Length: 479
Image 1 (tube, rainbow, N blue to C red):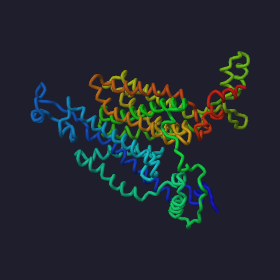
Image 2: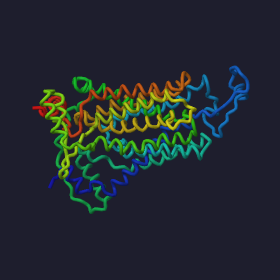
Image 3: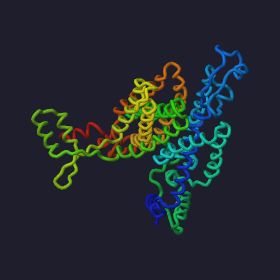
């Protein structure tokens, strides 16, 4: 008897030992990716130095004789004297890394839709958390390995192991099913069942109703520009993704420029993201509960007396939970408000650094504010993946995520050059990051809320009344 994909997953095991092993592989991969992203922070670190005589040396050989580096580590800066007029090459090296990510995103993103998901690793909240821990692991490696060539070797060697292990990953049965490859999907489900310790299953999948015929073409990126709602939604999301990447990697790479111990600053820039994970998950899914005995009745009576429609709408929108004789007011924050708050808090944290002296010995220092900004933007980065996937119809979700991911890479390409702006003033990089975060936070308010709302399956669903998030819902509640 033929069964659906969800029933087949239930028979094979939703999340058994086999899936846990695969998840562990993908999670550990993020430690390697974190080391790659942060490589230039220590490999390109600028130690303290002084030059014997005033004036600009006329040649590199002369500079090598007159310059003295103080710290007990090596980097590409100490190797090739990449200071002053040559300092831009360090930022350029980091920028080229993110340019490579952009090329990979453009090249392998569409290929994953055509060839499969096996070589494409999707970062979920757990892998984002592991990425943060990976930054701290890299700081520990840098502390133990002070020679930059050995540090690069130790950081890059695991990539060979992950490459070889990736050939053992099974293809996504959901992708195979959507492409009409039923036999292959059944084989993968059998592999999952055996990995979960179950006996061989007698599976026969039903044909996928959503499989495209050969003469049909899947909706693509052009559909994002044709539809007015999706067009403006995509423009706003592209900017938000750009800012998240720009501020996140900018603050991460700027960890090497902060006062204090270099390795401790790098480790803290990663560990500060750990609380961001439960923080964002709590606010986007849970209700904020406040004491509210008789509050709704009071607001409704005041609204009727004043005839204020705004107050009436607010009163009707309040959600209440009853526990015996007590009434608790439950205000659900959702994706939009939560991401707006995180981005604006990150922006204000960065901007406020310009008002704090660096040598005053105050508990609230520019370094502490920078770390708070990093935690906030990390939480926003976690949310934007979920939020974006819910804002696009199913048929255009991959195209929308791909476009937003490409704009994200441009933020990473520009971010390495911002810390060098400290030559104008130490606070200039933080002001740039702060203004970017604030602007993205305010633009998020232009997007609809998606919490507990139906997700559109097709472009036509966007015109359906049940998908009109704001106006129709308010009209129903106030009527």
